[in-house]
Amino acid sequence: MLIQTVDFKVITDGRGSLISLEGGSADVPFDIQRVYYIFGVGEGVVRGAHAHKRLRQVVVCMSGSCRMVLDNGLGVKEDIVLDTPTRGLLISSMTWREMHDFSPDCVLVVLADSHYDESDYYRNYEDFLRAARGEPAV
Ligand code: T46
Image (cartoon, rainbow, N blue to C red; front, side, top):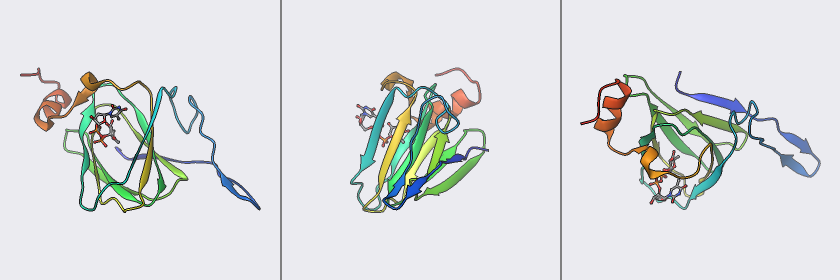
């Protein structure tokens, strides 16, 4: 199962709603070392198209919507529409991800377990497939 989601506890009162996310919890099962967000994505643009060697992340769509496609490099490919701030998508390491169909108002917030490290990326799909199969890099 590549798609792993968590429905967050929503604290609602007469003033609106609040969600609190803490690292090392069922919502975010790691210490949060980095937060970044993606917004202002144009129509038809595809983002992602990479995998991480070690990084784990939780992605939350704060506004609008987009479709996340996950691929384990071993023949399993699943997708999910992210369209609510009440749900998080946990993306494990060694998972190829692509983001499609961004609405103009889409804002994605990403909680990550490590600082940014370009050497943690597979940006070439063939390299990722080889690694996923346990084959040596060429
Ligand atoms: C992921 C998806 C959901 C940084 O300098 N620091 C950062 O923390 C990040 C994430 C990126 N960058 C630089 C690297 C590139 O020069 O920002 C530029 C755009 O990054 P990238 O093309 O990797 O962005 P996306 O939207 O394709 O992917 C990002 C994350 O990189 C990735 O880990 O899972 O969002």
